[in-house]
Image (cartoon, rainbow, N blue to C red; front, side):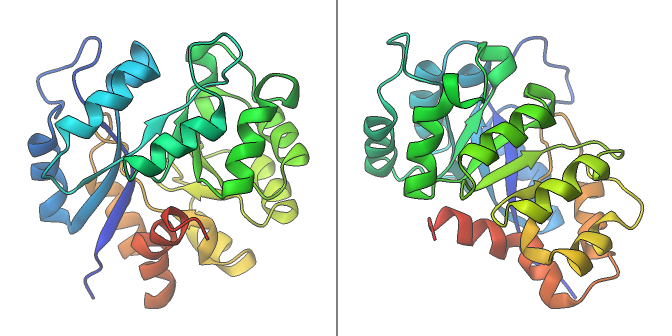
Length: 246
């Protein structure tokens, strides 16, 4: 059975030291995704990560216009005056039909703990904005601290490693809105185990383009020993629900 995939983890735009095989533009990314049944993708701009969120957040709206890519903005705490307060940031998201945020705490030099990111995370929790953060950009200790302070935050851990379950499972047990992105979750039988123990709603499909090839993440879901209903949830329905702010 074929499934329509909605990718939650794509970077668009030129970044530092790209290789010839890296797709950079929206059209180049679509050429990688569409043949595999990935009909849509949530995309942030490389400049929002490597230069400044204010730069990349504006550019992504232009560069993906007319494509199957859906904009994702990068956020930071507002304390230094570089970013608007989060309520205003969310208003701007709404005005531009942006439905999710990506965080890069290590690269942008801040902590997810309440003393630093508390006001930002509180607003995202209140408005049910889905928050995507790559585990390499933070730590499980900081994620645990953030979720303890904001237990209903719609947080998606991006690209956890294959040896992460002893960290993930206690968090998944405690926080019902926590989810895991699948591109690097290569635990043997891991998708099946999470579906059985916590439900398929806790997994969100991602490819990791342009750094990962999307074929393997698609295969991990398509060939998993789970029901077709669970596969549909992971492939697209869970992300659609998150972006609906429900």
